[in-house]
Length: 260
Image (tube, rainbow, N blue to C red; front, side, top):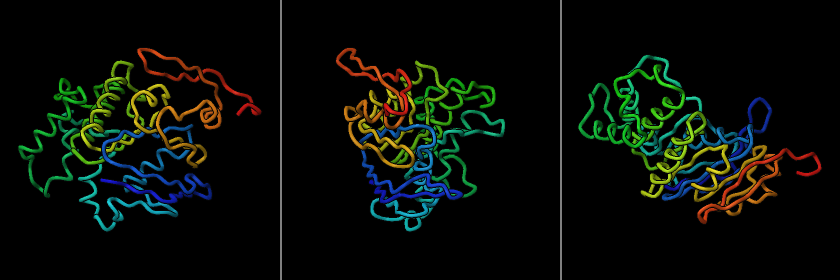
């Protein structure tokens, strides 16, 4: 599925959260959506997921608007992992992951063999199969996030939207989650991931989209993320290096008002 976003604008209580953002998302790539807090990243992701309506602008999925596709069909083609996803009920892990199959099931129908296969694949990919009989509330924050990622993977959709999937995850699983997302993209799907870690973004993403104050500052390959763009977006200086032939970026120090 190709997604075309044109002049996306979102105003909330008089504040402009997104300001005429244009973006094209295509299969086979992992797009890192980065920028400071309040830049509009989560707002844009929710709009793409069809969970909120733009004040102005359009979002088209293979040329059609969400209402033309229908909510049920769009839910099968697009999976969304929320930043603050929570499970209020004491559900078992495998049951939570199974919720990702709801868009594929008819009302009052039980799980099919296809559903069970998708659930098992998703739990294996997110490395949570060992928790299957535990309740989500018994897990750590990072483990819960991996369960919710498994729920999104169980949809087996064409588009995966993930809002800060590694925020509460330890370094080992940060690397594994990012590698998993890269594999999902390499399989021919489109992955859009909100990140705050510039090193992970530059290392694992094919494209980086930088938002600041609701506007798009950059849309390009990781090497296009210059010190000037980072200074303008975040107000920090950076250190750069290389290991095993791969460049990396580290935020280093705050910049003064005249240095941005």
